[in-house]
Length: 178
Image (cartoon, rainbow, N blue to C red; front, top):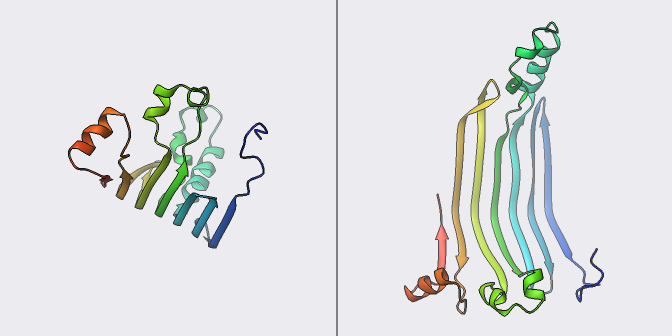
């Protein structure tokens, strides 16, 4: 730990409402609900984080094929068959509001660098989901990636050119979904 910090001795509060772990044969589902982490005015909250549908059945089948090969056949084995089905990774209800960490530039009094860095890092994410399923020789054939409502406040007093232009257009918040 950095013992030279002024923040020495501050305690981090961590709360997790619930966790789950479910195994069904070679499939795994794991996750947590209600993660809250904070220290004074700094907070990070995650309503849900999970991995569902992770399946290492195809890995075990591929390994069985590999060990049954003759030594000269092993070099041409498609090692992608050892990849598990990753399933779906999901994060929802993320809310971050933390003090911007001091970098070497800002700690040494570089006002120009400090002026472009907002005092706080703030963002919210309603939902993020990535599914990599239905593998063929280890390569996912059904891929879904979606993000819903990543919200970033545009700092009022930033000297960054992009933020200044967005503020001039009347934007206070930037929301991105795909």
